[in-house]
Structures are given as structure tokens and as C-alpha cells.
Image 1 (cartoon, rainbow, N blue to C red):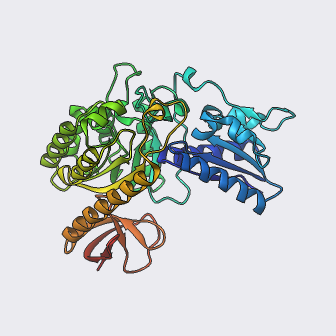
Image 2 (tube, rainbow, N blue to C red):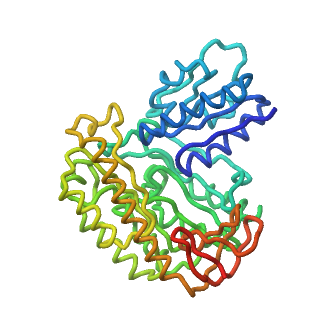
Image 3 (cartoon, rainbow, N blue to C red):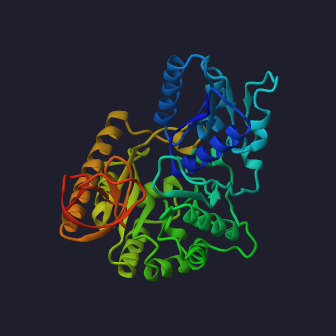
Amino acid sequence: MSIDVITFGCRLNTYESEVIRSAASGAGIADAVVVNTCAVTAEAVRQARQSIRRLKRERPDARIVVTGCAAQTEPQTFAAMPEVAFVAGNEEKISERFWQSFGLGSEEKTRVNDIMAVRDTALHLVEGIDGHARAFIQVQNGCDHRCTFCIIPYGRGNSRSVPMGEVVAQVRKLAANGYREVVLTGVDITGYGAGLPGTPRLGKLVRQILKHAPELERLRISSIDSVEADPDLLDAIADEPRLMPHLHLSLQHGDDLILKRMKRRHTRADAIAFAAQVRRLRPDIVFGADIIAGFPTETDEAFARSRDLVTECGLTHLHVFPYSERAGTPAARMPPVPHPLRKERARLLRQDGDAALRRHLDGEIGARRRVLTESNGIGRTEQFTPVRLAAPTKPGEMLDLKIAGHDGRHLLAA
């Protein structure tokens, strides 16, 4: 049997799962399941553990290898599970040498190196992303910031970037393989280039990709920290039609005191001004955002300012997290908001997000959009809004469609 990879979490994990599949298959690993975990919340870790137990019941003879951010930050948790054969760190999981040596008589159950000692990141060539109509490319890994709620730097290490020439070559290869859209991914992609010669920024990378890969139809960038957006990136948003009009912003909150306690580097006014500036540059742009509900010390008034931010920034696609304590982070030692109140505030924020999405969907009726088709009769517009297709279409097609209506979650193609 071949290697199976189960992926939790972000687009970067999705990309790395392809690297794992290629490296493990090339090493001849068979009858194994790799669980590529996420550590962003305690719930993500719980779901990974639940999945591991279920997998072992379904495939009792399979070797289960656990890797990813949760394996990096709490390897002992997974090593103690009787269902788990091996625990590998984030650096090990993408190493061909690791997979070639896997299971060769070693009695160790855990191989998790010091991620903070990693200084470089290499571009791992993949032919595509299994089951996805768009391809992802890792351009950066790690993070130099230390937000008080976030465990991810301890799972990913410090920021490091892939040289521009390697990224451009990989984009061209993916476009030649038939991918119409490529997504640039990383942990903190607006921190791109800090350790590279000449310290190029994300905007320059975007410009170079669009210049040297004219065959690529659509380029998309994943979550950004708006305070790090450089002038070249803003110029590209304004005048590069192949750069898609959708930005997912790492906002986290709408109250200045909470933002300070989170150790964020922007204020509420910064977020509102950035959204207004980008909308002037690109009127058809749509914003998504991450927002945490129930952060320690959050008052009713502070929470209300987060809710108001949805309208003031013109957010459309909300990704809401109830605050989750992560052991070892400063926020875990701050006075907590009760769990039921966190869940209720998250529910209210999601309700606001649903209303914002509905307003956006209402405004799309009658428009013509270029839609990249995915599986299960769904496609995505330039603004990343999901569309239900009128007829079955194979993934990866680009269609010019008129929008006839919506169902509250998806646009409906005529």
C-alpha cells in the first residue's frame, strides 16, 4: 500500500503534505499514514488525536507517523499515544534523508530537532497539489514576531525565505503543468525576504512572478500582516489584474488595548486606514480576516469594537477563533474570559460575518465573473467567493459566468 497523508491546518501544511508524500513514496515507505498536525488551537490538537485513534481502528496494521506544528511543540503528547509509531518534527518531515532512514532498525520513537536553530528554507519542487484546482508555493516559513497568544513560532522557527529565482521557476513549472492559479503561502509572508541578499520584499517577489511567468493566469497571496505591506505590493494590487482582488488580513482584534496585550504591531486605526487605502487602489477587492473572540481581559466594550471592525474595514470572509490557551505563551497567564462567554462572542462575530457575506453576495447578482472550477460543482471568483456551478465541470477550468443569485453561502451561476 502507498503512503497516505492526512492534513490539518493551513495552506502551508497542505503544500508540505505534498512534499511528504513525494519524499516518503520515493523512499519506498508503504502501509503508513502520516498525520500532518496543526497547533494553532487546543481544539486543533484534540482533533488530530481523535483522528489518530480513529485511523488506528480503521487500519490496525498501518504505521502512524505524526508530524506538523503540534508534533513539534508537544512531541511527548503524541509519543505517549499507543497508536503512534513515530513522531517527526517540522524540519524532519520534509527531509528526503529522514524518510530514507525511517524505520531502518532505530528504536527511537521521536525525532524532533530544535526548530529555532533552522536558518534556511529550501523550495521543495512539487508537480501540483493533490485534489486541488490551484497550486500552493511555500515562499517563506517561520515568524520573527511573538504575539502573546501564538504558539506557531515555536512550531515553525524564525522567519526564513525562498530566493526569488527559485520561486519564479516553480511558478512557471506549475503553470506548464496546467495550473491556472498559484497561491503564495508561508507563516508570515509579508515578512518575506528579510534574510535574503538585497532584502527583497513581498511586493518585489509578486512583480517578478508576474513579469517572468506571463503564462500564469492568476496569482493569489495568502494571509498578510497589513502593517508589513510594502509599496511594491500596494502598486501591484493597484495595477496587476492577474493579482487577485482578495486579501486575508491578520487583524485578530478591533480594540487598541487588546491589540497591545496581544503584542500586535498595528492599531485599530491602522487596520481601517489600510482597508480604505487598498479599496481606493482596487475598488473590486474583498477582504477576509482572522479575529479572536474572548481574548484575556476582553470587556464587553472591547468586544463591541471588534464587531464594529467588520463594517469599518468592510470585511467579507471572517475566520473567527474563540481564544484558546496555548501553554508557554504569555497570554495563557493573563486573566481569562470564561469559556461560555468566549463561545458566545465567537457566535456573535460569526453572525456578523454571515451578514457581511450576504451583503457581498447580494452585490454580486448580475455580475460576470471569471470562475476557476473546483470539485463537487464549486468554483471561485477572482474575489475567492464560492460559486455553485449550473452544470458539472472538471476541476481546473476557467469559466466566464453570470451570477444569477445566491443561497446565503455561495453565489449561483446562471
